Image 1: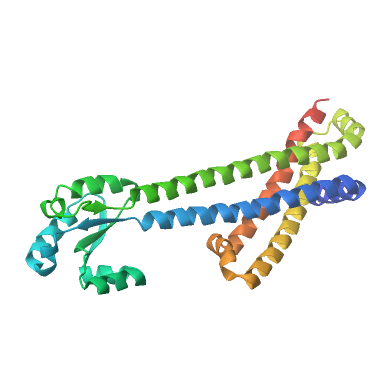
Image 2: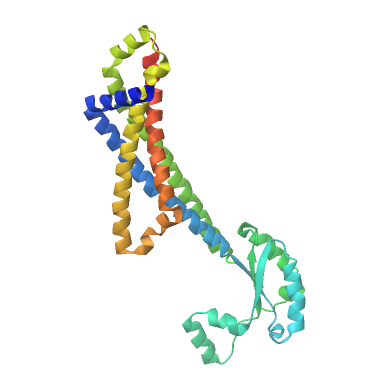
Length: 292
């Protein structure tokens, strides 16, 4: 019964302070909308970085004679299996390697009537950041060390490191923007709710003087802030749904980030964010008015 009282008090306050409530709702809407975009972008960047890391392949090249010598390749395979951080590996013959090349490269090989590509082992790692360690250990394999045409071990170090470092800084930038948005939202919520509380400061003082507890005074305002935050979050979800449908109709690839995060999960996160944002903004604003 008491909760119903607090709820109706919060609704009455929202109706009587429509302008400040609208300002707070729009603030939460904008912040939550941007947060939804940043969350999906950050998750896509993270997923892409993981994909890049998983695609890192250490290539161990062998002398051309090993293409026809299965026993020798078997001995090298046992040594490759013993290398650190090896997840899996496969033997790639010169013919298979040529098929992986571009059409122009295949035509060039046909023109010279010779396949210059050596036999090789392609190694996938359990930890892509340890590629240099695996590559150094692979150099100690005699057949690899004497491949005849250096470099005998490659893994695209410069490109891989550049991509991973770039993605890392993009993630830092996106999370930094999300943090700034959260701080800005709390400040704006504080300002808008402070106007509502300031207009009722005499009422709060009287309630305190007649013995009302801090919790009794605080709860209606907390509910008001939570309802305001929830309304803003629902508005942001509606905008995000419109953007999602529009992008999905234009190019399904543009909506992949939302599918990666999971639409129900994103809805739950943003709704919870709106509720917590409103409650937190109201709570910290009320502290000074409760000191009577």
